[in-house]
Image (cartoon, rainbow, N blue to C red; front, side, top):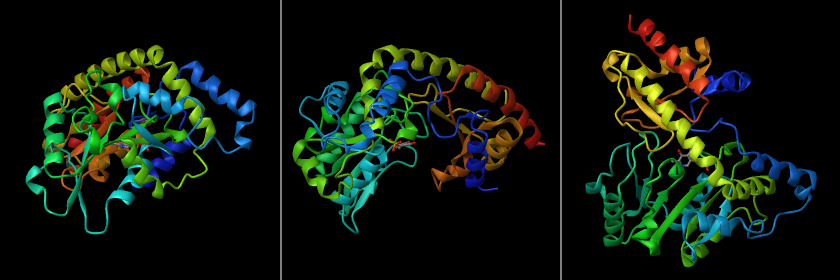
Length: 336
Ligand SMILES: Cc1ncc(COP(=O)(O)O)c(C=O)c1O
């Protein structure tokens, strides 16, 4: 079985599967978000290309969400497309971008070819997050070496204490912004790449969405920001509860542990190395025997991926309980 087969199976059984494999969010979405999608559909806004700068109010709402009055942005089909546009525009063949794998940035690896640092904060898959002084440290290094700093803030909403790298290095920080995780809109594919106006201008050459991005997604995104105060605290509360459930579950399994607790994102890495059990096999057994979809680490890190299982927890407490009931049983069977 490959991971692709697992995903096909999981999608086929989508309604029954506890979807803990992609750091998405299957908790109920705020009614105003659904309403915005339905209204846009009913009014057939999809007949037209959306306004070039995005639907009215969306980019202002994103600026307000970040507290960045002067930032410019390109709306994209998910944050990942913004990172693609930025790297196409700012890096040329032979240039290097440094990221983490998955621990703190190996700073000794900066070479003359290095043009960009990529910080994922909070980090996928570890769930760790940088402190204010660590982000300042990264920004200082980027400035000292004249590097772009890509701050991937996809999981920012899960960390109440999150600090933007823009606070320290506004002139060359780009923020990769996503509506996929906390607002639960992964399938709509909406995000943005955000930065100072001159930097964003230089990215536009590679913006493939000259006719805009999905209008239904934009309406949902705007409604999500307008109602954020109403839905975010509840999501954080369920995440905190589910984190505790998973912690107790992992503690029951000899040799398994959580390298990072609490997570500042919506996922954990479960270190399985001391158990001798392969994460791929755990992924399969949890999915096919218990309809719980988690993800073996190998797709995330060549070096460390064989050691861990990633489990995300923006799911209902009932789904999390299914994981809690099945993980120790699966591990017990496989350890024998
Ligand atoms: C660190 C990080 N950045 C970006 C993405 C993709 O975000 P989007 O769905 O907005 O393209 C993910 C998805 O898991 C992610 O983990």
